[in-house]
Image 1 (cartoon, rainbow over the protein chains, first blue to last red):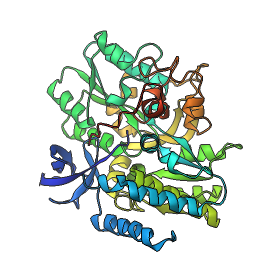
Image 2 (image 1 turned 45 degrees about the vertical axis):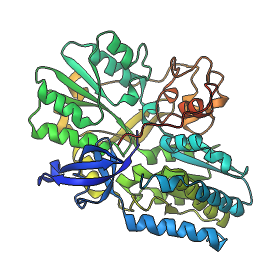
Image 3 (image 1 turned 60 degrees about the vertical axis):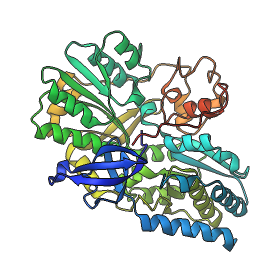
Image 4 (image 1 turned 180 degrees about the horizontal axis):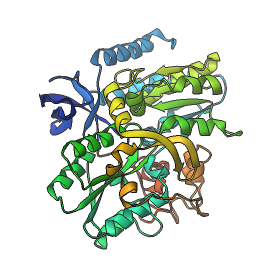
Length: 80
Length: 373
């Protein structure tokens, strides 16, 4: 039930904070998603969606940093 | 797909498994809290990539599984009433009540509506004002903001025919309960990444400190889970027990402030009975008294959750990490997805469902899973 799926914000509508929503693309499938909990999310951002609500804006820089760290782990040999 | 595929990279997963093997010098038992993590572990065979010293035990993170039977029975009663519709996530539909389940109730004419979001139920209530709509509000901290927002939107729209039958539970009290049992085996936790995306982890520091267990906030894809295990094992091997965050792309220490504020506006913390586990103090949510019009227990009478009767289902032991599904004599024999003895066999987060689906007697696993946003 805590399943949440990443998607990309295609458009944002609604100026009312309670009913801010947008169209989110999930690998080609578009759905309306509530954006009330991610006031910082704009068009082009990736969000994490659970039962029709975005619960986080995905931090792409942080994601890249982590994958870079893991890649370095490959060549660096030791874990830390 | 971005943010999924790169975390299912097999080579990276194997390198992480090597890192864990290098770090491990003795046996450690870790618990993954969330049923979504359990399913990923079983589906992708993550536990089989780990060195034999590392055991993963499965935690209580299946809200459907811990919902008391009396709540399901009330949902069945309401669905059977004339001019009342019971709305639910699909996950609850096959969970057995005392007699039937919600799908069975619908087959007999009950008005049971499977919805994708609680706001779908609000829309239905607005469209059919002569009918009562009750949404079965089950879930952990991840789902509470959406359900709280449904109440706020129903209030704003002046709806008088919408309410929640609430069975919300909270993760930290369950972790406390597991660690407080004198003979528990859990030495470290992979905390639930989506729960922590909403709540942050301020409440987790005291648990780590008091019980001297590392807690790693962890995501749901194979690379996430393996990195979470690596971070947890490295803490254990170094004798450390702090809260760390593996799921940095989504989870932040303070959580989601807007979501938390919405939850606080609608719900307050309350004692809750967990199916198979018992009453845990301050382990759930209920609707605040000032929003009582939206509380199905205020509108239709309180639900009394009693001591549980004896059952052949060992869900309580499974949910506390004391037994694994294939240790249950009923597993795959008298308990199957078609005829479940307990919720863990039918919930998409249930450990028994994961074992049967991906390892069971039903043949090779079906790796296609519908990932709904």
